Length: 116
Image 1: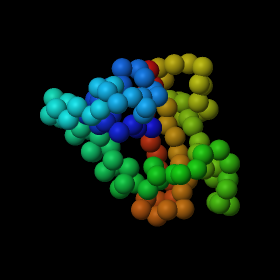
Image 2: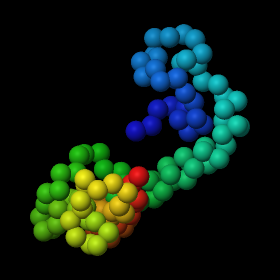
Image 3: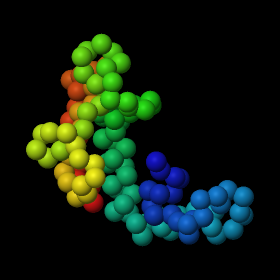
Image 4: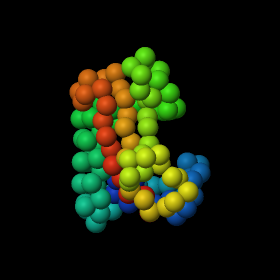
C-alpha cells in the first residue's frame, strides 16, 4: 500500500493520522522529488510493471482456492525446493503462482521474491 508522497520519500514522521494537521507534517515538500529522484524512478517502473501484467492488479483477496473451475487455486506458495512454503523460516526464497482470467499473460504468472 502506498501513501501519496511515498514515491519521493515524503515522511509524516511516523504520524499515520496527519490529515487533520495543517503544518509541515502533512504538507508535501516538493524539493524531495529532486533529492530522491532514484526512488521516484523506481516507483514509476513498478507502476508500469503492474499495469503491464494484469495478474498483479487483483482487487480481491486471494484465498488459495479454485474459484474459476480451472482446477488450480487462485494462488499457491512454494519454498525454494519446490515443496510447500515454510513460513516459519525467514530469509528463504519463495515463489508464488497466481491463476487469472485476464489474458495479458497466460492464465498463470510466476513471481519470485526473497524475504528478509
